[in-house]
Length: 359
Image 1 (cartoon, helix red, strand yellow):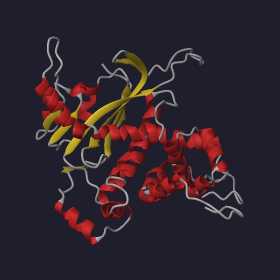
Image 2: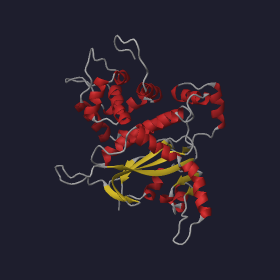
Image 3: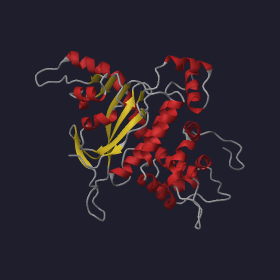
Image 4: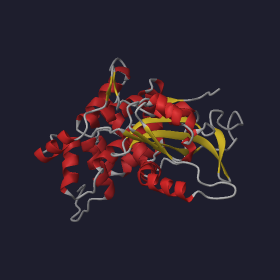
């Protein structure tokens, strides 16, 4: 983007990424979720537009920016200002206090999970449908262990857990991912010491035919059958024993991993691209809201890149998300399975909650 008297310019990866997200994120529908809770113009200073604040909030999640950092980034980056819609010639960028209050608004009304659900509904309406295979998994997000604060203690809602020979302190992000499109349709935030299998019923939509997972979910056949009667348990089995290794079971696990490993791609985007590795806030509620926003961004990004970029199929999938699909895409969608429906609910709506207490 030319901003002055420059003769040469080059479109950066940041600009390309923001152009893609500009097209695939359903901004109008997300603004409609926030609008009822947003301050209305009155006698005081008029509030900043809902869509503008929502775009700033997503910039924070996509580029791992704090409230002061996103304010500085808006003054520093012309690409970000163009994405948000700020003209410094006529108005300043919203300050960090305004950004903080908007974040608290989303947390107070639990709008993070509604944003994730609305994104999934939008993707389903555009033809990116949830299939009948689910991959369940969890990843640990680190929390600060310092006690140099007013209470002189660590976050009481976070806990420690041992993985291998290493101890971790923080929160677990437990997700249910579609085995074909790698869309996150369910997310649950728990303390790190909560077992992965404890929230397995909350990660299933109920009409699966296959459920994949690592050995943390072994022995949960009855739970899977109760939540999804038609589902086949494709979780990994134990193959290493005290006196021998079951090579046949080991080979089966390796075969199952060709599907189960797709969930690791989701975590790679979450941690490596969006930088969501460490928790920024105290308490499960605040961090769960951030988790849902990150999952929503990952879902639209993953749906847009379901197939290899540069191919005709990738172009059709992009058109499916951003506008009317071409005839070839329509013909292909007719051959796919019908949208999964359960009486009184849409399966792509996220079912999310933050667990703060467990028996």
